[in-house]
Image (cartoon, rainbow, N blue to C red; front, top):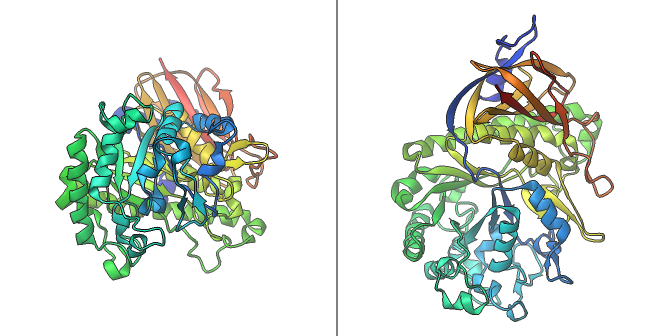
Length: 509
């Protein structure tokens, strides 16, 4: 239902064909609306140095491989895409991460502190992606996004030019590349997805829009000359005040769109705006229902911001879509608010993911978390180093639930009880519903109906803690594992517990 939350909550609950008495109904129109992107559910991996040990903490130096528990958690999460980059890409030199591991130089992590060993390079990252069934996405060093200090570091010039990016494409994808073959990899890596820079419009030091567009064309031509089949992602988000606070997407696509497949933005800045916010410090613990409602308000901003981006991209659709290559609930303190361990945060994560799917005609790639680490609570996967335990945070548990129980084509939920937020899809004779009960206090019961079709059976995968303040940690890593329940035969209906997030699968006769 591609409407904003106020319209959604104000919609009258309609009685569908399967309604019994006055019972409200979820009524699905099974006609396909658009294909859901095979890249929709992505994760974002960045070496974060001493700030939040992510990549290094996931590597087992004894086994000289990724930690088994981390690989298992990643496979369980089942992302469509894993992106390597972030601010780190501004000074990353890809050649330092190829070849014999013992010959790779260490590098300083200028943003996040400390040093990186480069033990994880192209071979290791792509290997993780393939083991998890995900497409690798690399964010190339786009002339340091124009930030001068990365050209004049104590270690030398850390900018990467268009030729360096093109050489990486050749190393990865040229079947006859001698250097890759000398490194023990005969077959090409076949990396399809590449992003040109990261957050190029943010801050006052990087490229202005005109220069960024010119370099986008330069990089795209150089990289596609090496492999015309690759898909490139350009940058389209809003600039800083000194660069003009307009959205870059329209002008970027007007002038460089012929070279691009996707335009990227980051869904950040979701901090509190209420003067009486309970989302700073531990205030939410005294007022959890107010925290739930305030987080729900944040999702209105997700939808309104997405509508603005869609307006800029729509003239270039369907050839070009939107990629939300970063996006998380970055509450203070920076990326480590304790509420993100608790089920209270589920209303933001789940409804945002529903919004992205409902807007999937243009949204082709999206994430609601950073991928993994040891400290930040914005992660999808949390790594416990002693004991080597990896577990999913609420954002990861919801992403896993929705990704694993989803169709290939979007369909419409024509009506539903006002408290339920729904994204619907289908594959052949199965209909899938992602259902968030937005009510903090009330179980919502609804009949289930698909127009023109009979429901032969079904099942529900439900995450519904009795206490919305339930939390995940190393002492209870499986607390948000969904429970599978059958839908009774006959006229189907279901009761959705308060604050629950559910995936419903309906079998059509």
